[in-house]
Length: 169
Image (cartoon, rainbow, N blue to C red; front, top):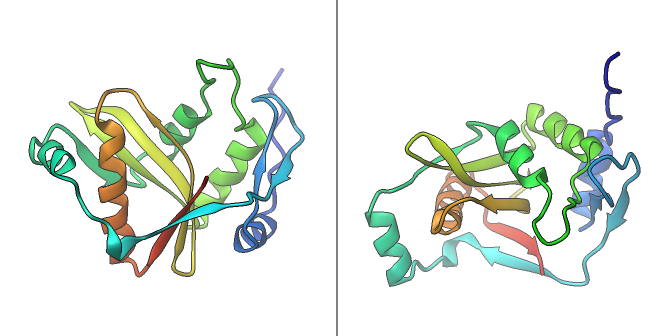
């Protein structure tokens, strides 16, 4: 017997939601239902205003990490969907994961990966449209891996004409 295939959220609906400032969530990994979240506040991070602190610059110069974009979207999604230590659950259901994979196939969802000695140690994924990137979820398995995501992503977004990134606050 095969596992049921998750019904995706239609890409056009998902993109319309992002353009309206809302995004889907689920109560659990195996929950087929979703609900829409409209944060009261979202952080808007202008990419051209990124200032690298001395400690981050020092970390970057050490060369401990390699940063890639869209090299392993599936692995980033799986890591982000892993249950959280605090709750043992995740908001990224199989349906949400399948929906973002479809957006990735269409060139709308992207990942940034942080590698150390060939192992994926950090990453984030999100949705891009117009000149905006909406970060959805991130993970980090080793110290300092999370510090690499922002400068790596801001360089890549700027290179393709995006001017800001958002995150829920």
